[in-house]
Image (cartoon, rainbow, N blue to C red; front, side, top):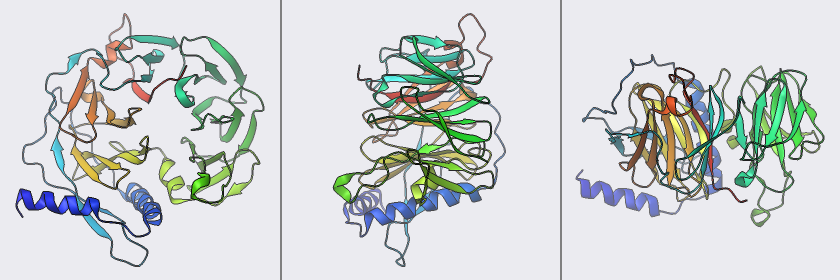
Length: 372
């Protein structure tokens, strides 16, 4: 098939109406989850300092359920693109999209502003943005701390055991924070009031908030639903306001990490602002970035060798940020033009003032456009 014929086929696939699109999306998430859990571990490649992909990278087929139950499953062949920014900027420059990036590093939690400048919030562990970036929730041993982007503490609560995996609900209406303390799942209101246990026997992986229901699409269900994984491996969903379990959906299962966390070189589906997802997957011993837009189009981008972390979406949904620890870089990839890359280098030193950058590789926790 010629290149022109292939492009025409891709155009027709993108524009073709999809029957039962909502149901198809549910099934697609289930397929993605199954692929994660069945994948065998892949040995880690040796570190590489430059970004390089073999010129003859093969096209990777991604089978995704696009049709109603009982109909044929479509095989969509995505585009595999070599990532090619060979000369990263030394340090962090201006971000290619508006917003601020929250970072977890061995030296604490940081915020990177749109112009590339940085502010250290404090010696905190894990951190998560509140909706619209007005606050940050962070961990400090047994304490859950809420602070503003200037680092001023607004409130703290003390849990029975070490606090892990805080996740702020994805809405600014009467917000909640879910977090783990030991083997229990807890929730607290966004103002720090009313902390209570939701579940026991929880696996050591992060919970995930379900997007709130859209009244325009049908009867509204529970507003604050959080999904989590039990130690047995089973995913459960619970109404954080009533404490009652609710039916688990395919997106719930896809959003919660598997037991032991995501396999190396992979990452759970991250929702794109305005619709769609980005996800890191393994294929033929290499990492690929799967980008699914709201229109249903998909692109696969070949990634550099070694471990990849992320992904995170820019607030405008145009860029996907991933980390490349072996290259000590962040790669900011334009979603609609995967060959367009902004690469920032020497990342470890940027969040280790006065040190050698030998701590854990700084992880992007979220990219948000603050409303303050």
